[in-house]
Every structure is written in C-alpha cells, then in structure tokens.
Image (tube, rainbow, N blue to C red; front, top):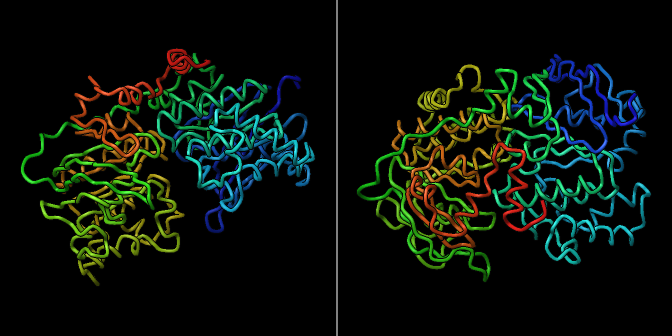
Length: 538
C-alpha cells in the first residue's frame, strides 16, 4: 500500500434490517483517503453518506451490519479487527464530529471535563496537561474567552460555539482522521463562516485527514480537496473539487448543482386586516429582554421570512405569537383581535388559529405513535372529529402532503425518511385548520433535493388553504425561494423590514449586508476571498 494512504475502503457493503429481512444500504463502494486530505461526501438523504462515514471507524449503527468488503486504516482491517482494537482507535486516532453538538454533549458536565476525558482515558496526557491543551485549542478554534469558556455547561454557550468546542474535543488526541457529519447544517450563515474557517484551520495546522459529510454543495466546495457523490448506496462519480464543480460528468451530479431552481411567485401586497399583527412587543426570560419593541404584520397567502443570527430573537418571537412566552409589553393580534398574552388564557379556537412546524421532526414527533394518531389528535382536539369523519380527515391530510394513505397511515415515525417526517409535521399543523403556520427552520436539516420538495409543498398548500406563513430561517437561499417579505432581526431588534426583492437588491443596514455576504457560493475560493475582505487570515 502507498504509505501516504491512511484509509482504504474496498467493495464496502452495508445492510440494514427491516423486520426479519436485510436490504443493502451501501452497495460495494470504494474510498481512498490520503494523510492530510479532506474528502467531501455528498448526496441526498438516504445516499449512505453517514453510514459510510461511520464505517470508516469500523462502526455500524443499530439495525445495520457490514456485510462485505475491507476497511483498512493505516494497515489495520477495521472490519475483522477485535472490538478492543477498534475501541482503542476511536477517539484517539479516529474522531467523529456529529451534526448536533447540543445532542452530543453531556448536559451535566462542563465542556472542559468532556474535552479532557478522551486524552486521559487513552493515556495521551494527564488531566492537568489536557486542561491546558483545551485552552490552546479553544483559542485556535476562535472561541471567546478560551481560558474560561471550558468551565461552562453546554447550555451556557451558543450553537456555533458548541460546534467549535466539539471540533476541539475531537482534536484532543490529535487524531489522524476526523469524520465531520454535517457539522454546520443547523448554524446561521455568519456562525457557519466562523465554524468553517476554524475547522479548516485546525485540520491544516495538524495535517489531519478528514471525511466531510454534507448536503450543502457550497460548503463542501470550501472544505474538500476531492468530492465523492453517492446515490442510494452507490458511487455516482468522484473528482477533485475544482473539476467536479466546473464539469460534473453525471446527470445526477448536475441535478444536485441545479436543485435550487424553485422560486415562489411573489404574492400581491397584503390588504385589509392582517392575519397576525405583532405590535411593539418586548419579551424575555428572567430579567433579560430578548425582544425589544418588535412589530410586523403577516397577511393571508403571504410569507414573511424572519432571519438573523442565533440569539437574534427569531424563535422567541414565535413563542410570543403562540402564547408560550407572554410579552412584558406590546400585544399580538389575530384577525384584528388582541390575543390573551399567554396560551392558558386563550380559547381553544384562538389556539387553533396558529400552529407550529418544528425544525427537528425526529424530536417533534412522538416515536411511539402511529401517523393516524399523530395527525388525528389535533383534528380531534380542535375540530371535535371522531370515528369515520376523523379517519377521512386523516386520509385527506396524508393525500394533501402527497403520502399514500393506505401505505403510510399505520407507520411509525421511525419508518419514514427525514423529508417524510417533515411532511407529517406539516400535516399535523394543518389538521387544526389554522390561519397562520409558523415554520421554524423546517428545511435546515434536510438535503437540498428534499428541501425543494418541502418548499414546493408549502407553497401549494398556502395557496390552496389561504394560509399566512411566518418562516424562521438562517438560510437566505430559502428566503429567496419562498418569502414575500423579510424581517431582519439582530439582538432582539428588527433592524430592517421590507419586500424581499427590494431588501436583497439594496439592503440599507450593515448587518443585512453582512448576512447577505455570508451566503456560501459554489466557488472553492469564496471563503478565502471573504476572509481576506474582512481582514481575517484565509
């Protein structure tokens, strides 16, 4: 073997179990990774990206098995090696950075304690040395107050800071290989820039090889030396990044490049009484004001996108509208009528009129309930439907979200894809026959092909059902696709508000211009140019 090759996977086959039967997930894929190289794995949901990334550690998740091929890591076949050997490599020479840092850290322990666990357990360094090393890597990862931040608990830092802390933790034993599994998917655009720059710097500084799994083509263009495209467990094509971006050979790859083609026709300006009006709202938690004097309207058939960095107040505004967080000042009107500030004071009909669709369908849907129960409960609660009328309503809603009722009605959430789960979230919201739906980052965890399908579905339903929509997102490409108006929030204040076309063409505020400049482009030199323009090291 070439001594420069760190990882060589040949003819890898991985099966997944459904009932008593096994079916192929990864179908004979080859992969070669050199020391210090970054390989990007891209493809839509179900392509096998994460399964292949975990297999690079000699690991198969529950319900999966590695059924064929070899996984050679620096001369060690991870498929046949004893479990003790694999365990000794994981965390020390092979590390993993998950998509959701918030779900990956132990909430009961401080960051620095979790950082030190790996190097101490693997005998790489003492606890005292590990604590000093943590501060050094926190500084390299551009975390604020590197001497102190490690003594915070996970809930006491932002999502972007937590993602960087996880990357630092992965580097604690100076591994030869890191698998990054969608590490910036849930981050806003400005935080994503910081995390991408920090990840790229740390990988370069230590000569670490990496597998970077993502569905975001513009992101992988900044990170990867080579790109491998997967589709339903098969390799489609592989090439160096610049060649792949300039001239993809296969039709499927070209379809990924062109997927963001959907643009919702702009709706006429709202007239008459808005469906919902937020009027001079100030709200917060404890003694801290998170929102300050926030105002905007949403009319029927119109989509208002609320954008801004993490902590800007987007989701807090949604909590005020739904009554989960009563405002200190100001009010929320529905159809011109002032709503009680808290949900406990609202009538069932007032609660019905506003429904939420959540970011993470995996955690928003009860895994023990079948789809007929998940969709049927709000129809029963808000509309009083029972028996045959309820059954008919459930089937109508499944058909409305383009899922065959006979096929899906008795499935559990675990038997659905990510896009199908999000469609169930939409159906559950529509079951109450609301006037307003609030979509809270509903496409951020989905690949671009599935995103486009969800956006088209929402557009169709909004027109058919005369809905108003508040769309919370950090993805400005999604805003371009679906919004009529844009509300830009920063630190709890509306800094700019106007029609989408005007705001994108001529933003008035520096913060809005910063957000727009932070949207990644499908150009390998984009991040370097951006950092140089901002006076940072590229």
